[in-house]
Length: 218
Image 1 (spheres, rainbow, N blue to C red):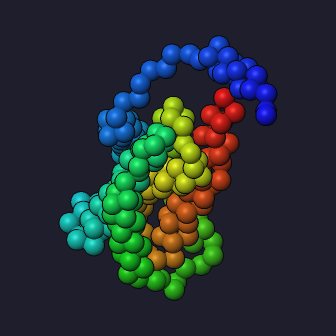
Image 2: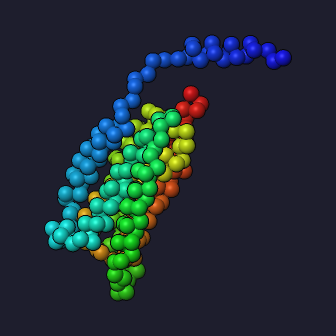
Image 3: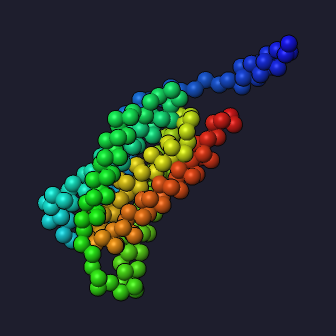
């Protein structure tokens, strides 16, 4: 029969290392706080470079549907990530499905944009680099804040939580950058708007086990 002394030793260590923790707020409350800070953090830089025809674009049903669907998808996945970071808490199957459906709508709307064949390589890159830089710089705040919030939990599947967090942060940044970009063209939007979202989400999911998985060691 196995000597149970190792179990008593383990229990004694766990009891000795135990520290009081503060109960987490509900995911919905934490999401609202995150959204409030993120919206303010994105409005401040975006207000300086808003597209000249934004008032007209906001009257276009297709543009409103695209941006509205992205806000819905990103917000719901942010909520799902906060829920999934609580052990035993279901992120909500319906929440994730609605979010994914909203992202599909965004994809369809982007694919419906016209293709301009008059781009030169230099012009294409020059115009796109502004959007690319904004995408990565502006996403830093929402992503960092959300990862800090998620670290207070204990994500059992950190890569999945990281993927949802990535879409949430980069998705809201997508909307802010879209409001500032003067170009409604498929190749530009695909390379300099949608691709940063995909790459940023993949990178966040890949790094999530390092950022969120340290609770296993603790």
